[in-house]
Length: 187
Ligand code: IMP
Image (cartoon, rainbow, N blue to C red):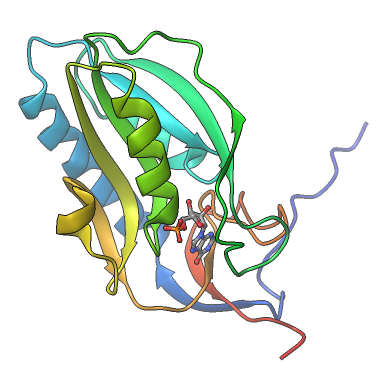
């Protein structure tokens, strides 16, 4: 059977200017891996992936951490099928692992308003971890990273909605290898 061709994003008018290339993403994640390996030496950190946007980041990051890491997954919803936050965060899937006395690293795709992160931090801190740090691939320039206690940041980006490398619009573009500005066809 002939395999179906891979979806091409080259001629998609909704895929705008490149924000980060595949190489830039890979290089920065390798650096973050080195940093986390040093900071968590002699520990067995638990990487908590915030689904679904952070799945690509988590898999690449975990493979750059030279320690016995564990992974678990949590899912929240605040955007639905739109590019604007609904302002309400809802837990869609909870963790399986008990966080008591664990060194937890919350792995996020992007910190925008910080609403999701504030919700998750409150929920995870209540479970008694030994430590809780946040590692996000992207953060908006406007985000109060200090106030939100974000320790590891891949890249800081401006306000435009972006897609690719895990980030979606209505469940599309997650499998695009680079990160690009989303061009809304309705505008
Ligand atoms: P916050 O709660 O406003 O910080 O939004 C964080 C969540 O919104 C992220 O985990 C993403 O799922 C989603 N999000 C925010 N900005 C973007 C974007 O530019 N592209 C795709 N998803 C985004």
